[in-house]
Image (cartoon, rainbow, N blue to C red; front, top):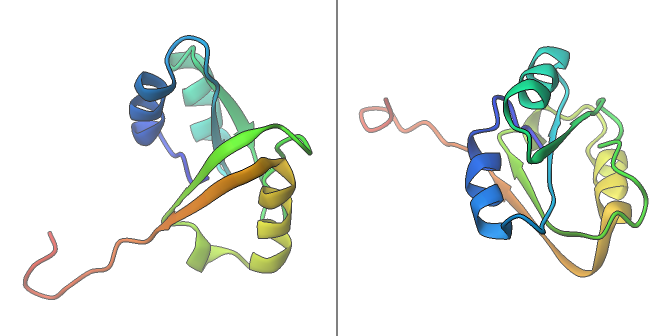
Amino acid sequence: MGAGTGLFCRAFGEKVGPTGVVYGVDISPAFVELMSRELEFVKAVLCDDKKCNLEVDAGVDVAFICDVYHHLTYPKTYMRSVLKSMKEGGKVRRHTHVRTKGRTI
């Protein structure tokens, strides 16, 4: 979630290989269109502020949420939709960049 231009999708695509599935989820129609056009191995999905719009029981192994969580208006509702898309035992990984004065460019 927060796939943007698909930077991390590329790395995940290499990891899962040709038989795996990478969902690129973003709230920006422009980024979803870009991923659809340029990353043939990514299933680009347009989300909203309440749900990720992945199918229930989509079998997601890992949900990687990058620099999105603090922007969510309805974080509990959104995360419930994420969890519904995951397979049993799936993992959620949340990453938020933190700016440190004098260290972050």
